[in-house]
Image (cartoon, rainbow, N blue to C red; front, side, top):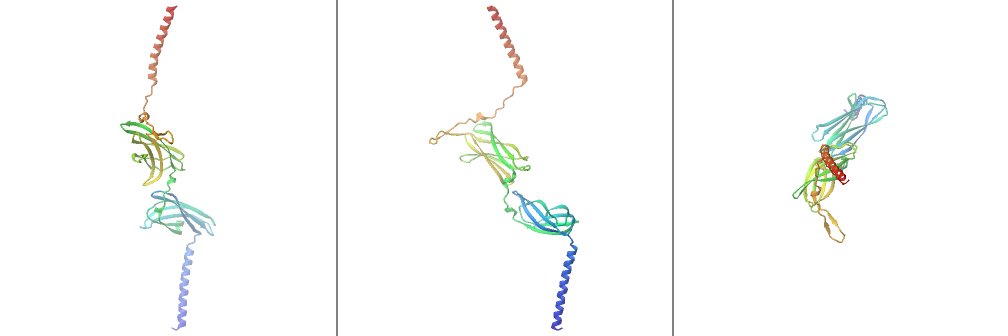
Length: 315
């Protein structure tokens, strides 16, 4: 075989290979007769919590040349380390008209640990026509949204429940307002009393916020026992799992100070905590009140009779 024959043979071989590739591509295009395409996929964070992040996955779908029926979208999320399917969500879209663009949002919640591989599949008649893959990582670097819980710490009232020896038993009533749009979650609350000057911790107690309706205020109460004749800062700390998401503080003075003049020393004002102790007053019933009235009436009648007798004798 001479050189020219070899060149012709190689040329024919290349033409055959090119034709087979082109025909295979045409065949795939012919089989994949969908008029839809995934134009874009946007991922945004709706809410970042201490352990989870709420994501919004919005897929932009465009239609070309003809209408499409029985359209649906399938979202699959895989663990990047194990390859296991972590979750999936599907949305039925229905019909998409020619030239129409639709945006399909899907909300998911993922742990902030590890990474994920996400696949968006576009289906027609339950057959996959288009797909788009995305990788998600470094979710643990996102800072929690501490202001998005909707709960605000308002006033704190203190009631003296009792005084025993050198200790004062207090009840702290904490006003919590939900200024968000939705019902709040149930969070843990740490209430601690620390001495104002030395910051020594006198007592602490745990409670829960409970679920609070939007635009409403709820009062939660905790008991604290502190040494009397000191001033305290009361910290109110709201926790979401192991993360502090809201702080507030109030002050209670069991040993107030009065400044007489800026050039003089501070004079301490003695407060007797027993004076503020909550005392239960028994209500007088109507029956007991009625029982007392006849006795008073009889005495008044006797006095009236005696006065009449005295007047009569004088006449």
